[in-house]
Each structure stands twice: as C-alpha cells, then as structure tokens.
Image (tube, rainbow, N blue to C red; front, side, top):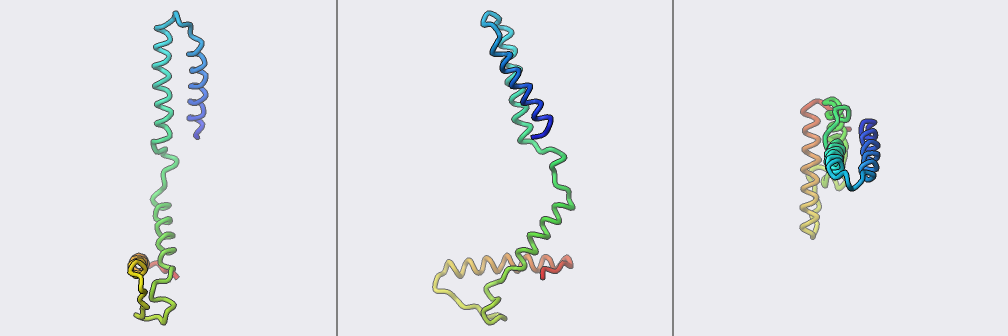
Length: 123
C-alpha cells in the first residue's frame, strides 16, 4: 500500500464510524454521508487496480527481464543433447513424450536463434 492509500483507508474507516453515529432523524445527512463513503471506497479500490507510474517497469528493465528469460531457456538441453548429439533422437513409445520433446526443442531453438540474431550469447 502506498502512503496515499493508507491515508485514504484511515479516512474511510473514521468516516464509517462517524456515519454510524448519525441519528436516524437526520436521514438526509445520513444518505449524503453514505453516498460519499461509497464513492470513497470505490476510489480506494480503484487505486489498487490501476497502475502506479512509480511501479511501471522501465523499457530497460523489460529488456533485461526478456534477455534473462531467453538465456535461461536457451541454456536448457534439447532432446538431441546428451544422447549421442548431432541429429540423433531416440523416439519414445509414448506419443505425448515425443510431442513434448518437439515443443521443448522448438522453444529452446527459438530462444537460441533470437539471442544469436541480436548478438547475445547464451552459454
């Protein structure tokens, strides 16, 4: 929570207490206070769902995160690594395993080629 959100919450809690103390005979005042509180709670709730400028990632930070994720993926072994190397692939009896291997191989190869195209090493 930001300092502004904390202050808003404190104010709303205090206002709820004040509103509860309004005499039933002062119906107009109670209705107005209730409406103001509803608007205040809505504003507080929206402050959590909208992006704060301070919390937005900078473009540099986004690129650093992408490079880190790509390098992590590119370093993984493919279905061809460790089993004789080259183009050798030992097929499984299970079609789902073959599909998963192909999917993983595609993602790893894509990450490696993308890093190479921008001059980055993944080793």
